[in-house]
Image (cartoon, rainbow, N blue to C red; front, side, top):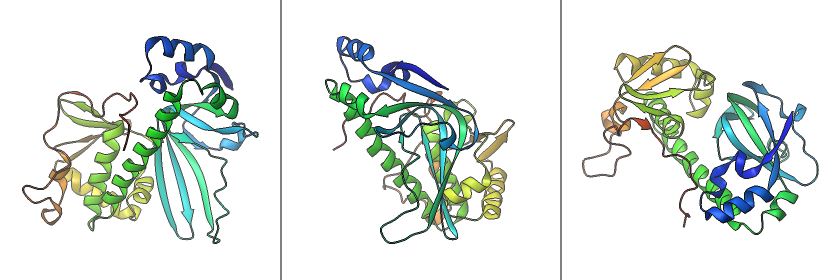
Length: 267
């Protein structure tokens, strides 16, 4: 069921760069429709409209997994609050004839705000919104590049460890007992596609990290990461002293990633 709400009510961070009076005016003028999506396999075509004029959906909350399969290979893209999706875009017809199939899974209950041509035209007096969406797209692309870099490591254990930290950077919470990641729907099979490995090798890597005291599994799909990103790497893959390292000592308790106001413009 679609719910009619203000765009900035559904996603206030789109107006994070606005002066208060501009935010209030945009909040009154820009109205959209929001749909709630339960966890599990997502047959989007059964619940989302895709009429002419619809541009896409902004994810207001939740975590979505887009599974793409090409012949015998597969990959997974994780998306969450702030990302824009267009699930009805053609995934099957490519310029040089690749055979690709795509399906979607919802790992954490989500809400999606519809963006159509009419809404974009109405938002023209507030270019901060378009700028925010473009900045988010670039930020997501760079986050994906980090995941691809993690998947480029030789040892599956290193790939898994770094990928979990990349995911925790966005969805993790820092607690006195470690960085917690609550994603019950993130299966070993999904992670295997994420790090370009087989499911059995990912399961073994989970066990190895747990035996080393770096990873703890708690009820209800909660994972706890201990230490820092570099701590779980094999010696031959650790950065040399003096090199730039991704991550140091754990920061104070709270959210791992800063709250998601729109990032500064990306050059």
